[in-house]
Length: 373
Figure 1 (spheres, rainbow, N blue to C red):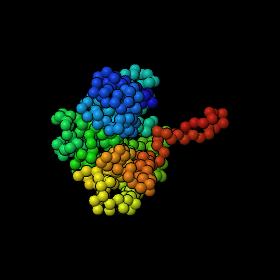
Figure 2 (figure 1 turned 135 degrees about the vertical axis):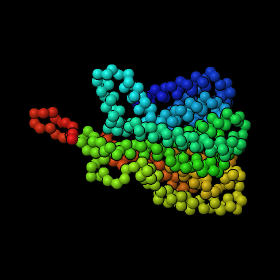
Figure 3 (figure 1 turned 90 degrees about the vertical axis):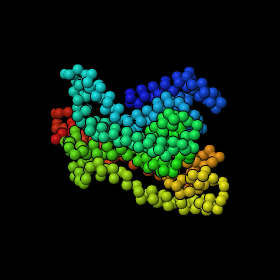
Figure 4 (figure 1 turned 120 degrees about the vertical axis):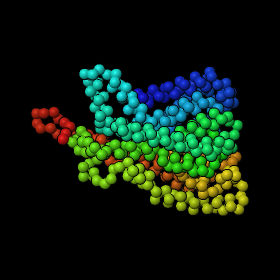
């Protein structure tokens, strides 16, 4: 809780000072929109750290495309509030443990926390698993950054930006797109190969954290929790493959049938709009790259909804997202996809960090006591 509060306070302070005193161009833009730095800084800090992806400004953070400091700080908050959260928590515990006195109760508590992290907190992982999560995070960011620079260095989305601006905007998009959905460039101006990879990253979403959580809960060491049973799952349920590959495969494929059905329903409900676009109807024109009303745009919208990112390829001269012109039935299907995507990270069983079993003690002793092996 302290970590979350501190990050929000730091985010608000940094955004407010920068927007209020350091960037006159942004101040003029906010003034034209009737915005004040204080509420915008508060909203932006919360939205960034909580990975909500919403901004008060109508074009997300595209007005900050030439502000590397702001984009870098927003990207850092996005990572620290999502995939980087377990990494930072373990780092904080390690720092506190090293600063504690050798024979103190605080040192013993922190030692136990580092040795058995999954017994105490859902988002605190063993050192090896935390390192794996860090490497996966860096690999995903590096991959998407490289693809954006390779495919879209001279694309319309990067038009008007300097060479370094293209680099840090590509880095920001790689950091933000997978979970937060903020954009500093026009996503509809990117190539189809890039947006396809973006859709895949949004589908992955929080998968690295979820896989690490489940794997570390019933890891290969099969530790006993405070109740004396296998950590994270009942002994009679401890069957099957629990490798990282098996957990990843399970997370990524658990809702495939549901998603296929949703795609079918939306294509069915929107069949008339597909026909209108094919016949040259211009109401839904979106540009030359993605067409007017195409399957790829539906696919991208579904991937964004399942990843709870909020990105959309949009519509030309329309302020709403692409799903804004869908029928009510299709929009309700999209809502169901968002709910399913939000719930996919739930644990399979009661997590060891929250499960405590009590039993009645014999007469004359304390009323309750923990059950140990």
